[in-house]
Amino acid sequence: MAFDGEFLITGGADRTVKVHRNTISPGPGPQRLGECLHTWKGHTERVIGVVRPEGTRQVVSAAPDAKLIFWDLDTGEKIRELELPAPILCLGAAEGYLAVGMMNGNVSVFTDKTGEEVLTWQAYQRAAVRSIYFPSQTRIMTGGGNGVVRFWDLKEGGTPDGGFYTIEGRGIAHEYKGHNAPVVALQGDEVKIVSAASDGVVRVFDMKMGEELFRIEGHSDDIRSLQFDRRFLITDGTMNTIVVHDFASEEGSDEFEIEGFELEDE
Image (cartoon, rainbow, N blue to C red; front, side, top):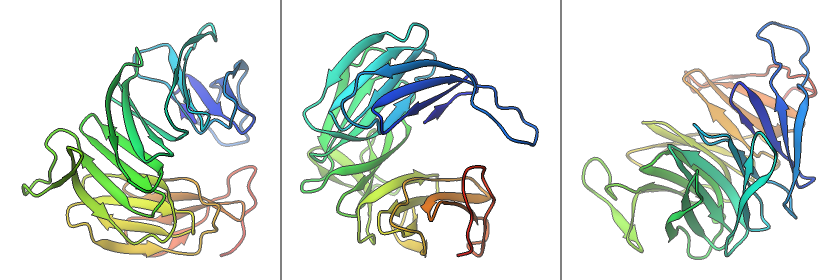
């Protein structure tokens, strides 16, 4: 899903991409999606990611059919289609670039305007890239099907203290281990990495030291996404519940009802 204040863009299990006009108001009360401007068909499998590159009138979608499709936001026409060598499992975007993680363990980076490939490397030798977090041109975090999270420094290939090692010329600043299932969601900031695995466990790692700070258990195996800021950690996929954790103190959690979800006590 991509939301930029003007449009809400979604990719679905029905293999389509839908563009809705934003009509969400800041006040309380029920909300409705705006008019559906476009429904795009081009993928043969469920759409796993959509992004709207900044400064463009384009939308990019990705799916396990190995296709990366660029759409014209105004006309709905397909601008270009890239067919990659393996199924695409995750998609990220930052500062003019797109990054995709694939079933064969590779990560590829493309320009978001022309689709030119600028970098490809093997992030995992015997595991798929199941999740990706791409906060800037120089940093990418990947979650593997083997449960390992890796932080890649694409500019310097190392950590602030000068330590690093490489895989096929790419510098890994850290590996974060502890998950016993594929890592399906990732986010990080300057001090920590938060990851969720398909076994329902969320782990928080120290960015620099690579050590696990704490974990949150009790989610179902259907957890698929997470997002945090300074105060809250939000996770989904738990018995039709969205869970909002108090992320300022490492203790406690609250649940806020979101329309369309039924909340149950943990």
